[in-house]
Image (cartoon, rainbow, N blue to C red; front, side, top):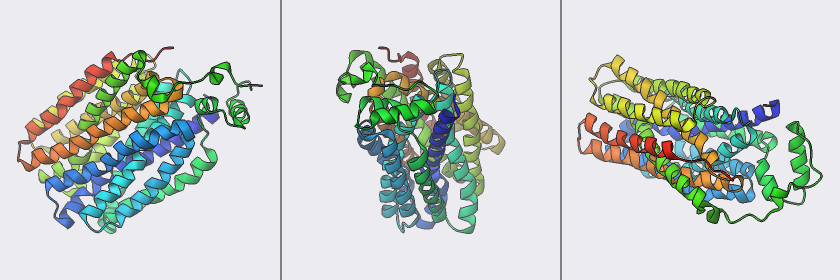
Length: 419
């Protein structure tokens, strides 16, 4: 990969880092907000799910516009939404205001991931594509890790509001970087031939060290079918459904664990700082899991590795639910949960671009991730109901681990798109 390709991927990794910070910020500040506002478990469940509900809307409604107006344009719009939403969250004075702010922030969080996922897939070489997407997914985890470390300091010295303010500043700083430095998708330029599209194409080809064109390649001149019609084609529909179900089930379990782990540790008698440390452990080992999956994907099927990680995650999550309240044991299980579940998530991200043809890649990925966010919304909310009903820890962990098995079966049988 050329330096230009590496730079394009690196910008997307930074954006993924911001996305991870913004999404999981609520998990770190939840114990403090709950104590200050006296929130019940059901209210916390709604708060956790609010941003995820916004992500569903963003992924389903906003991200398809990337195939019409460009990946770079939508990424810029999403960064503006994230900046405004994070500052609004920090300025919230009650539960309702914070829920609305998180829904708005979720619009940007949900639509930005399909865009950067597509750009990374297109600017990576064939050999390193799965690894590059895994690194991007690891950026999400690094963002969550940074969020945990910074949250401990900011909450202690300034208050939970400043965790949101920090995220808003971070998002704002990335806007000029994307505007001036992030290249547009090559496939978008080819399929949406504007007046100066050939100049844009040759500019990018020269940066990539490739031969320039005197006219558009024939493939880009052909009339493309409507996006949703293509999604219903027999050779794509089955894989799309399987990918949707697999992501839905994974996100249901993942966001339950990501959001509720600090609060559960507090309920077991540990301090807020220690509970956030538990999330840090999950994210640190999650980075390792995502990168290891990317490395293995150079030799083995990324889908098979992801399926194996999902099955292992089910076992470890269930074990955590039924384990004794012994801190070293809990942290060990949390480390294994992070390693397997973040690794599996990176595997599903790497699978998505291979399922769709280039002209609907952002739309297809957006729909898949949008429907997946429904699972992300459901998991934390159901957990809140089960905890409020005083169901034993082992039982509600088992219930919310079962989707991982379904996800493993689906990703194992997915067939990549072929012309």
